[in-house]
Amino acid sequence: MTGKFKRHLARLTGGNIRRLEVRNTIQIRIIAIAIVFGVVGFMSAYTLETGNVAVERTLGKVDHEEQGQGLNFKMPFLTKSMEFSAKEIAIDINDLTPKAADNLSLKDLDVSVFYQVPKDRVSELFVKYAAAAARGADGIYMPAYGLLVREARAAIYEQVSQIDSLGNYTSNADSCSQRYWMNCSDG
Image (cartoon, rainbow, N blue to C red; front, side, top):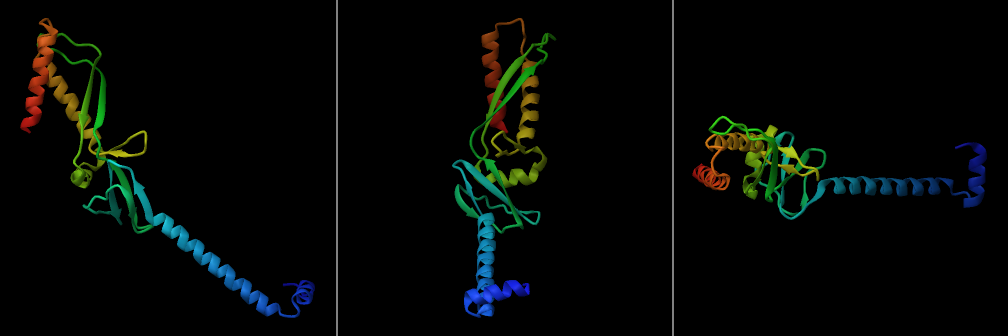
């Protein structure tokens, strides 16, 4: 502090400049420590919506115990939590052009596929198919999304290749649907 400022401060405080400086320093330290603890506490807590689970990675190692809905805690700066949907997810596969059994191409075939991953298997899928997880528009990851899109496209092309396109469309669509469900339930 400058000499002139110290003299004015001494006059205002009655000569107790050192006590005033120490008291202010202690208050500033207490406030700084409270802010640091608040930031660390805020960074260690997170919440999950109903139907979602979190997979935590600590220094690159995946914890295979999924965290459930509500308030959860993690180690700040060391643990990263990724929120996955365990709800039923719809995959819309649009504008397919598969060939039927009589070598005619169907045009603009649109299919919707629904899948759901059990809550206790999300971390296993994340580890096994890490590159296949996709982030939805809401910021929540969909486990094995890329894998399911590829498998669904292959299954659609395979099933359509067994249909005679010149036959009755409704009966063939029903039989295709039944064959596909039987294939899915087998494996």
